[in-house]
Length: 378
Image 1 (cartoon, rainbow, N blue to C red):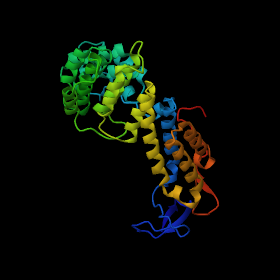
Image 2: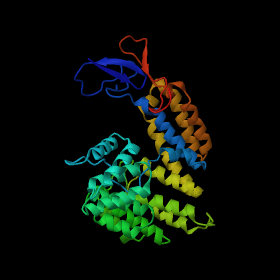
Image 3: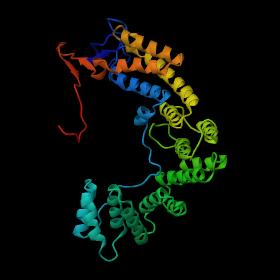
Image 4: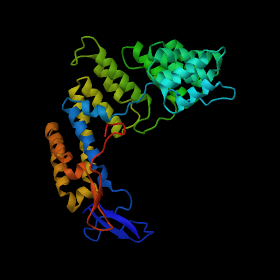
């Protein structure tokens, strides 16, 4: 026998082992869930919609906390493995690096490379430790010594190139990225440098040939929410550029035309891509575009959530009513009212702390009362 769950009336059931198709709930007829309960994700889904509505209202902050932090340039900060003949202090430093003890690793490896003709992997280990400690000057110097010791150390090339690009030395970064091999990170960094340099040196949108070559270098784009794509990078750079224009007038700024064109360069139409666009328009004060994008995105999310089995079942009547009210407010261009309705949903105890009745005894329940970060004080 296998435990099953009804999303429609939030009740536990048991079905025969080996059941391929989920049978209907004997109480309300909703197809039973044989895997993870879908209601568990309700809070996150509603938070996403509320963040989109906040951006529409002029506050992009909540949406910013949901968007992934995509590093502009990719690196290889994996700790180098020790080699035969490494002195004891070097082995201790590499072991500390592998265990995340970066200050200890930096100190030990600094001693190790002080010896004559230190090998490339020890310099690279020192560079990794320094970069983890945000000592970028030492990191770049260490990666440079690693390249001197072994010009074909592609990881050191990749890491030094990223540091050079971050401080605006595009020519030197290009040299390193060119010699960093054909790994995915190197191909992306070459593409990213091409886009970044074009945005930094031309007033409008990079020309079509520049973007084509960048996409060709980067390879097949991924729709996964946190992955890099040329379109996502381009949009982010143009938002940053628009925000740094001195004395810009949002009503007439040419950056607005450029950003509207850049929106069409996004490769995918996922929630994360539309959220990125909404956030960008809101940040630069393009209210009409932010509202149009947010309205379409919020309406689609509300419609999808309203189609969930729980929202269509007897136990979710309260959710269906809230989603209907929020959807009406969105269609009437009242984002503040829609957001207030969803905040009421998020404050419900059964949403904040989802609980599943115990199938064994029928009396207790399984759930989460509270949580804290792993490094938080008890």
